Length: 339
Image 1 (cartoon, rainbow, N blue to C red):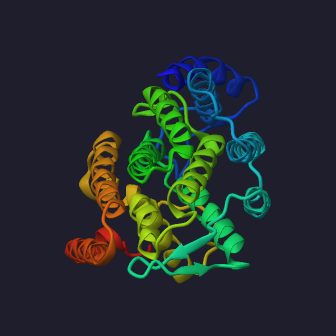
Image 2 (cartoon, rainbow, N blue to C red):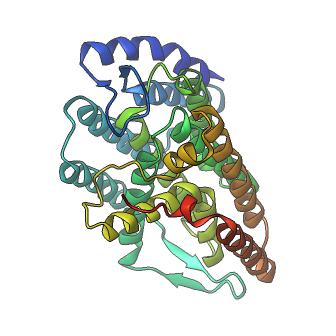
């Protein structure tokens, strides 16, 4: 509740700061919004997150562990990177370099997937040098997939909120209590911000927010699910974030096919396609994607509480259902013809 209220109250001064610093998202050819809209919404989310953690520390004590301080330090650097990008529009190469530096830093400080366990024999699979490489890669992937789906009012924030809440439930069920406070504060702060970000939005997350949400989801999934997980548990965060992951994968293949820079934006994302195909407004398309995300995150939660051979069976059932659903979608929805 503290995180939610703090984010709500922080939105007004953040709007003023965005206007003062000219961090404004203006309508354009690939933009959907019709009027100038302030960015920097991630500042309100980060303020709400810190307020929520502060209240938790007051009532419950040991919240700001060394691991938490590392995560928050990385979050602060991510906010700083997004803030600069929202104002000056950094080249994609500079932004990627900054993201990589942040990911390497937090992995070097211990936020990494240490090892995997075989779900049947429980044999330990040491990752060695690949531990940090895999962790850095995962952080970079999730930071960017949330950034890439931030194309409709409330879409990135809502998908992140649903995934964060699922990770919160999974952390409770698997007794990973060290990350619970961070996740519930993230849920509250994001929910508070969505009050102003849902259609018609009066403020956008900006890269300040989308990169922050992606970063936090990545590190929370590492510390709460993947740090010493079974092999099959790798599917939990993949299911939780499947919509932005699939959208990003299709975007990369589409841009490679068209021989354009994979980092350049376009209007071929899933939310653009749905908006054009169904001829509904933003609100309806966003709610449709919310519903799909809820179903996928429920599957992730169920996968987290199964063990042994049942985890494999449940994972295969999920994959089969997803493949059938994908095959039933019309080709022009999933893969629009290039013009």
